[in-house]
Structures are given as C-alpha cells and as structure tokens.
Length: 372
Image (cartoon, rainbow, N blue to C red; front, side, top):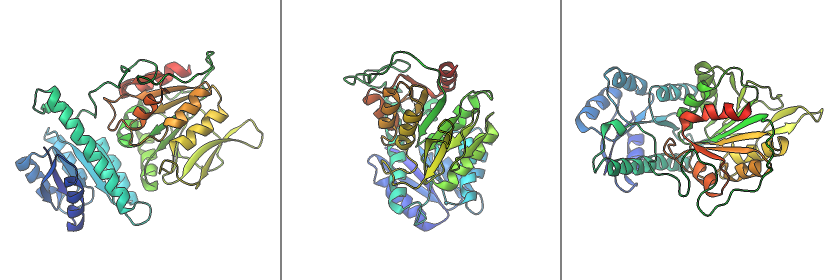
C-alpha cells in the first residue's frame, strides 16, 4: 500500500487530489495539510511515500518546504501541483531543481481541463506506485531508503538490454540505408518527467555543439517558457521557445511552445531550414506533438538526423521515430530504469525503431559521439 499526503491551501483541491489518488489501486491518502508548516509536521509524523505539494501557499510555500527538507538532510518524494501562471511555472521548475519528481498544472478551464489534470495526476501516481512495488520486491519486501529517489523501472525491456541496438522481441529493426551520413540536427521528444531529465541532459552538452537541437516537451505554454529560461541558465547553450519563420542555427536549442506544434520547413531559398509554429490539430491528443516534429525532420534531413525519445506517457514520437529511421537517421531511446514513465520510449522500442537504449546519464555523450 502506497501512502500519500496531500498538501494544498484550498479545500477544493485537497478533496480533488485526494479523490484522484485514492482511485488508484493500492494507494491510500493518509492525511492532508493546508500549508507548508503543517505539511512538515505531518510528513514527520505520517512518513508518507509520496507528497503532492501545492506550489503557492500561505505560511510556507512548496519551495520553502523543499528547501527545509534539503537543509535538514531529509529525503522524500514530492510531486508539485501548480497554478497555470508565470509565477507558478517558474516556481515549479525551481522545485524540480530542488529535487521534486515532477510538476503538473492545475486545471484552468481553457488550456488545462479537469479531465486532463485527472489523467496526468493519476498517471504519475500509478507509475510511482508501480515503481515502489518493484523496489520493495528488489529489496526483499521492504522499501529501502537508499532507493527512494531512483526513477521508475528496474526491469529491462523485453528482448533488449540497455545500451544494445535493435528492437523489442519479435519487432525487427526497420530497414534503413547502411551508409552513415553526417548528422545535421538533433530532435528530442519528451513528456512526463521531462523537465528533470532535460535539466540533467542539456547542461551536459558542450557549447560548441555543431548542430541545432529541437525539443518537443509536453507542457502548457507558460511552463515551456519557464523551462527554456531554466535550461539556458543551467547549461552552456541558449534555449528559446521557437518562433514561426526563424532560421535554424547550430549551437542553439529550440523548444516547441506549449500548446502549439513545431516543424521544420525549407526557407524561401529552398536551402535554408526554418521553423514553423502552427495550430494544426493535436496528434496523439498532444499539441505540440513529437510525431509532428519528427516527420518533418525525416523529410528535411533525410539520413542526416539523430532523434531521442525520452521519458513520457503514451506513444507520441514512436511512429515519427520510425519515419526518421526509415529515412536513414538514428534513434536513441532513454532506458526504463532512468525514465519516470517508459511509455513513449517503450513504444519506440516495441516497434523496432531504437538503435540504442541508454540511461539518461549517457545520452549527452552519445549525442556528441554520433554527430562528430
């Protein structure tokens, strides 16, 4: 049984989050708290496996709770729940930097519906519960403290060990040209657990990377702007939200704006590559969509693209990875053990489109090895 403490300053959200959490089998809400100060005392008393933590609260906010826990040398698993505002997005990214597992936005009636919020929160709790059960099994029936902050997954993908090429059992790799061409672009698709993963990956990339990098991260608009700023400050490369019509340049990272698609097109001279930001219909219930980006990359960089499919719920990006691979490009997949949710990466492996399955800690080095 997984125990959860729900922390929010409004009774409406305490009730909503509690109801969603308790709809997951094997999960029990052991308490609630209206602010950070009370939350700290209840964490000490109840020792919950997971805390859902509101970002902005009176008395003590979510950031202050995390700072207190860190200063005291205390561990814990925290999932941030934030209002869809610029301040809420900025604080959520700060929380992830302090060690929170992930952050989701509260419904606002427009960009984020109540159904979206329920699906996102339930998925994260389900995956946390599954991960915890795996750890208990590995630990001989008890959850070991040293495993408390490890990411989801302790099982190798069926038919594939991390770091080995090929597809899952029964899924042969797609046919592709044998001659390897110079890589001219890196495209990344990522979702649940993405901000924390990108905050590790991007700072590990060198300033002199000779190609542009495109990222689709499933997030609301205000959150992608905050993520771009955070990645710029943490890493060596400039990161920005993509703008319609801008020319792609090496050594820069372009992030699809939340709620809008991003693709690569030819410029007016039929040589230059430019970005298009569109409001085309969602794909795989996602906008931005990884498949939408990957298809354009396959078309515009035939045989000269490297794509990464990283942690995320669902299967967005798997078919697009196939397009890139069939065009002669290469596909790296984040492994299950280092992924918060092995949905998108697992779907790519199952279709046989992965050239290598690697832990998050090795992806930056592998990117550089394959583009030079």
